[in-house]
Length: 215
Image 1: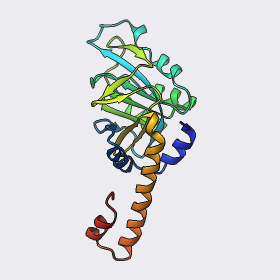
Image 2: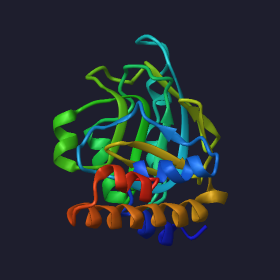
Image 3: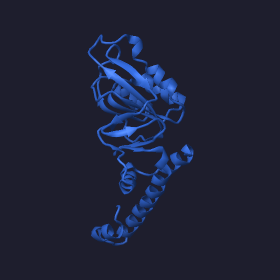
Image 4: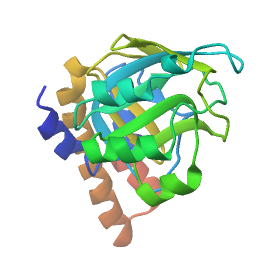
């Protein structure tokens, strides 16, 4: 899998288009419940997976929070994907985004909470989460594993599966299928552009739907 080529290829392709390709290949890879915390940002890169456990305040020692370990485990260009069970507790704040951004990490997905909304807008690090909350994760969250398969919304995410996330949602591309998904997605995107041109010239939307089945 040529990650740089995939990143370039998917840069201008929306997750809505990628989802069409996933459907055609019979792959379950769409996550819809995590939203972009910073509108207009996009994350593309191989997954670095993290599994967490959450309890009430005081459940775990501060040392178990390990946000720094997550950042250290993620190479430049990767996307950190955290399964925190959907809990409304923050596993990531503004300074973590800044540190990840400086390192060159491509983004973060959290099945759970993040904090520091105002700082996130300032840094514009691509960040996708189920909740934005002020509640700190220290002593509430324990990192249980880094680099093991996780599941979010029924979608299996393995280390190095390709992540593409934008304002519409998140697509998880199994590494062994990523190149074929790019080929199909690029064709669908080209069809969309042609349909747009023909609609501008007078083609009706119903006619466009008939001619371009994936728009």
